[in-house]
Amino acid sequence: MIVCFQNAVPREDYTLDIIMNNGNRLFLDMSKQLETVQFCPLKDKNIWNSVEVRDTCLRWGGNSIVELSIDRLAGLFKMGLKFGEDAKIDSVTSEKNWLLHLKLDNGNHLDMDMSQLLEFSLFAPLSQKGPMENHESKGIFSALAGFYYPIRDSC
Image (tube, rainbow, N blue to C red; front, side, top):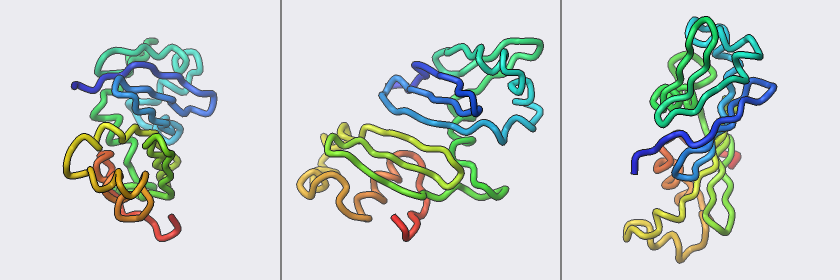
């Protein structure tokens, strides 16, 4: 399955609430990006609120067209607080329905349905232990989420 944007809601605090066609939901803090050349037009609330959802990008109109591709979104999502570093996981929680909640130290977070992975024999033992009961399974699921970072000891 090719992952595409399904919906995007611009929040008042310059956070994007994004739903992908695979059911994953991302919350991306764009406030720090507003000082960059690419995203500075989004400071205008009218432009910010005019986001259009395309299959593989989000697009804002106005005098300067601004686009955010899925690849660029992934880069911004995992960007660390310090230049050149990836974000770290602040917390990992799960629900009985195998919904994984990752919260990063840069303020971004992801809700991801991990139940589809249980069909693969590699992950079958995890279903016998219960949803992500330990750091080992949290690390596996975090890595599979596409955001492999060291999990902080406070998890």
